Image (cartoon, rainbow, N blue to C red; front, side):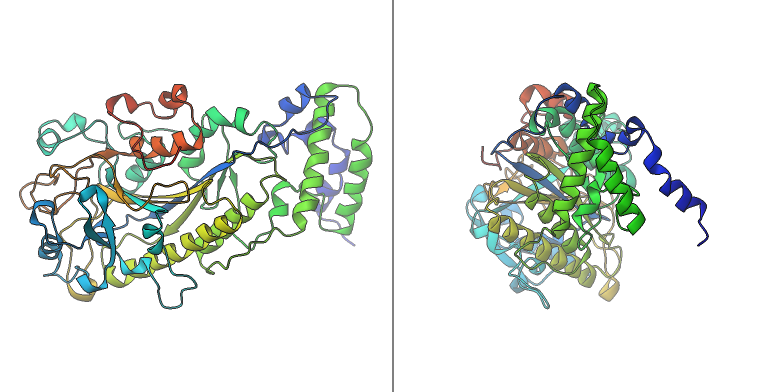
Length: 491
C-alpha cells in the first residue's frame, strides 16, 4: 500500500523523545506541577466545593425591551402603557395577555412580564425558564452595559470622553462585554483573567484547562496566562480532549500506543521527564475512561445551544475524573441582530435559549449541583425602543443598556438587581428623549446603563471564588464603581 507523507510522519511519531512529545499536553499546565511532585502519587483529593460559571452569549444584540416588559399600569415607573406607546404603532409591542408574569419585590411587588418564549413553546421538551422565577432560581440584572464610569444623561451629552469607545458597534461592544473594559481594547477576557488568579489553587491537578469554549475562539475565555480549550458540542465524544494525536483509532495507532506505554514505564531518572511520563500516562488513562461515554439523564433539545450545554453538562459530570474543582464555560446562540422580522425571529431564538437553559438547570439538579453551577447571559447590546420598519418587517436597531438573566440554585432569584435608574428603581424609564435615553433630538430610546458589566461580572466572580485582592487584576476599572457585588448570589 502506498504510504502518504502524512502517514509517514504520523507513523514515525513514536520515535520522538519524551520531551518533544510532552509539548502536546504542555498547555494543560501540568508539567511543572508533576515535576514538583516527582516520586509522589499523581493527583490529590478533589475539594468538595465545586463551582462553575456558564456564559450564554446572545450574538447580534438581543432586544431586552421585548424580553422583560412592564406588566403593570403604574405611570411613575413606566408601566405597560408606556411600553405600548413606544412600540405599538409600528407593530413591535407584544400583547399584554401573552406575557409571562413575574412579581418583582424590588419594585413594590409590581408585575413584569417575560417574553412568551420563556414558557412552554411549540415543540418544546420542558416548561422553559419562567417557572424558575417563582422557585427563586432565576433573577434579572436590569439596565446593565459597558461603562467607563457612572453616567447620567447630562454627563453623557456633555462629556464625550466619559463614554465607552465605539458605542453601538457589534464587534466593539461584544468585546467590551467579554473583556469587562469599555475604555480600551483588551487582549484578554474576564473569564480568562478569573482563571489566571484562581486555577493554581482551585485546580492544582487539572487535566484540562479551567476555561472551555463551545462557541468558538472568544475573547471572554482568554487570560494573560490562561489558554482555553475549544470543545465540540454533543454528541462529540469527550475522550478526544485528552487523546494523544496519532495514538488512537487505527490498528497502527493502537500498536504505537502500546509501544508508548512500554516506553513510559522505563524510569528516566529526571524529574521533568518523569513528570512528562506521568502526564502522558494520566492522559491515556483518562481518555480510556472517557471512552465510556459520560451521559446525562435529562433530555436536551437538539439545537445548537442545546448540544453545547449538553456537552458542558457531560464535562461537569466528568469533573472528578478530570480533577476539576472550578470550571468556566462559554456557550453561544446567534441570530439576534433583528433589524427586520423581529417578532418571529426573536421569539424563536428566545424559545430555543430558554429550552436549552432549562434542560441544563434540570440536569444540574439531577447531578446534585444546582447550587454549584450558575448560568448567566450576555449580548452585544440592547436594541432601540423605537422600532425600525413596520408590519412583518418591523425590527429594531443597535442600542446600549440591557437586561441579563442569571439562573441556578445559588441565585437569589425572583427579583430584579442592579443600580437604580432616574425613577428610583432598577428598571429604565421607557420614554424617548427621557431621563435614561442617551439620544437627543429625534431620539430612538437607547438606555444609558446604570449598572456596569464590571459590577455584573464581579458579583459572579466573587461567588466563583475570586478573592477581593484579585478583583483589580480581573476588573481594572472597578475603582470607578461604588459597589462590586450586586447581591444576587448566595454566599
